[in-house]
Every structure is written in structure tokens, then in C-alpha cells.
Length: 424
Ligand code: UGA
Image (cartoon, rainbow, N blue to C red; front, side, top):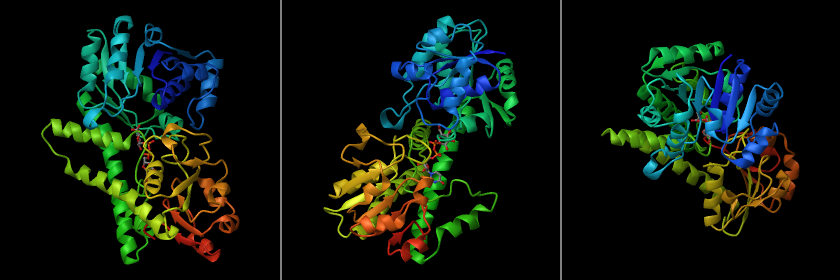
């Protein structure tokens, strides 16, 4: 059994912590936010993630998981310290490393002899070397190990990683981290830290590119009477392409893809290369928002002064995360064109700063009363099973814009709805 410290109790930190306790290690998590810390100490999860709360409670009960407020309390006895602090978007698309540098500076004097620091935060190329420089200890090695989990399946993804990337020039340190994580049974890629850091950004940029690609193909399909769902299968069965991440939608959002796209472009620029391919990926993503607003406007007839019902506000289903959500940007653009937006989302119960100007209701049917169009913006499964006869009877004008291609058009049209999806 090893002693581990995790600095930062966000998605990555908590998923890492419960994975390490699952592997039989003792883990102390440092979380700076007092409210979040209190929640964690009470055995509850501050974020909506399947399986997380149970594992936190179990870890506390078995005495193998604990939560403290300071990194200097968590780090001293640890063999491995995982840095899982946030790296938000700073100025001109560059990642803000201040939290990471602060955490490294705090732990440097208290780290045990020969401790290994593992950087899990998403960081630009060269950042692990920055952490090494801040720590400035000959005996302490820094290994860059990016995390690839998706929100909504964070615990599962962390327990069953598709691969483990370890970036470090010190083979002894790499071997120790590899031995710690080896029971996860994932392929391990050993490389230097700039490559490990590039892998993370390149992976997220590629995923974003796939989404913009399929959204552009959906636009073509609409113009020529093709069906994007079939096109997606037809191309996706080619193993060189793959079916994953080819679902058309309102565009990619969340706290990672948009930020990492900006960061890799900034890194490229620093290296003297202009990553124009990613400019186009961002452009398509922005156009997608307008394409959906225009579809809603066509059906609401007119948008000006009408009520638009919105189902789904989070950036994707199975998470309560509203950060950089396409749904919120669409709502903002609808309000700019003088529509009143009434929204329902299963995880949103009260007002939040990003929801200013949107009326939030706690029942999907209530959102549609008197509406001239219903926009489905997040792919919550429960939307499929609602009573659409009831929806139709309450709307001023029965029209659905399904920006996730979630519903079956034929029964809706039989009920009298105008239905429009994406690329079909
Ligand atoms: C993303 C990556 O998928 C993870 O591998 C990575 O670890 C993570 O970022 C991170 O860097 O921390 P996440 O932000 O949780 O994970 O969200 P995704 O599931 O990737 O979805 C991103 C956006 O793309 C969402 O808005 C989603 O609705 C959209 N999307 C996804 C589509 O529009 N179509 C698809 O086929 C897939």
C-alpha cells in the first residue's frame, strides 16, 4: 500500500482519489474551497458523477480516504502527490498556470524524500518542467500523466482508462508510477514530458475536429436531402474513422475542448506555427450555434416576442456542468433576437449567474406552455419518454428543433408537430 496525496478536489482529483483507494492505497485530498471540503468530509460528492459519492463515503468509512484544506497537510507523508488543480483559460487562449505553480511551491518544502509528483492537470507543453523548477528538489521527480476521463463517466473512465501516459526522463520514477497504476490493466505509454503534454491537447483537438466535421457534414446533408445518421454509420464503420464522437449537436462545449483548442493554438503560435485547421474547427462550432438559432427562428414565426421552450442546459447529458454550454449561448442569442426563453434541465433547479435572463422551470411540460417552438439542446435520455400529446396541446405553435437528433421524427409528425433535427 502506498500513501498518496491528491491536490485539488475537482473532477480529475476526486476520480483519481477513488481510483487510488480502489487499488488499495491510502489517499489524502487537499481541497481549498471550504464549502466543497465540508461536503466531501460529510461523505457527499460536490459534483454529479455516477458512483463517486458511494466511493467517497466508502473510503471515509474504511479510513483510507481523508480530506484536508491545505496541500501542505496532504503532501508530507505521501510517496506520490497528484497535482489535479484547475488550469483555466488565461489571456489570449493561454492556460493559466497560477494554481499549478502555487500548489507546487506550497508542497516543495514539505515533500517526503524521493517523493514523486504526478501532474494530472491539463498543462501546456513545458509545464512539467516549470513544476520541476518550482519544486527545485534533486530527490523529487515530476511525471506528467494527463487524464482522459469524460465528465459524466469520470469514475468509470478513471478505473478503466483507455491508456496511461507517463512523461518523464527519469526511468526509476516512471517505473514506480507504472507499478502503482499497472493493476488498471491499460496500455502504458512512456515518453518525455513535452510529448505527454502534447498528447492531451492533440487528443482533445482531434475530438473537437471530429465534432465540427460531422456538424459540417450535417449542414451538407440538409442541403441535399441526405441523412446524417446514416452517413455517420456509413463512415464510422471504417475502423480508421470510428463511430465515436460523430454525433451532430449544437457544437462542443464544456470546460475542456474549447479551452484546450485555444491552448494548443497558442502553443503552436509560440513555436512559430499557425494551426489554421483548428481556426476552422472553432469557426464551424460558432456557426453551429447560429444555425440552430436560425432553425428555431424559422419555426417560431416570428422569434421576436415569442416564447421558446428549451430542454437541456448543461453542456452535455449526465452532468450538472453549465460551463461553456452551447445551450446557454443559444439561449443568449435567442434573447438577443427578442425571444423569451423558458428552460428545463433535470439538474438545474435554481438560478445561477450564467442563466441570467432565462426563466428556469422544474417541469419539462411547464417550459412548453404557450411556446412557439421547443428546442432540445442537451441529450438527456428522459426527454425521449415524455408525453408529447401533452406537450403539443400546451404549445402555441407545435414545433420542435431537435439539436441532438434525440427524438424519432415520424410519431411526432403524426401528432401534428413540425419537426426539424440536424442533417436529417
Ligand atoms: C473531454 C474529452 O472527451 C476527455 O477525453 C478529456 O479527458 C476531457 O475533455 C478533459 O480534457 O478533461 P468532456 O469535456 O467531459 O471530455 O466532454 P465530452 O464528452 O468530450 O464532450 C464535449 C462536447 O462535445 C460536449 O458539448 C458534447 O455534447 C459534444 N459532443 C461530443 C458532440 O457534440 N458530439 C459527439 O459525438 C460527442
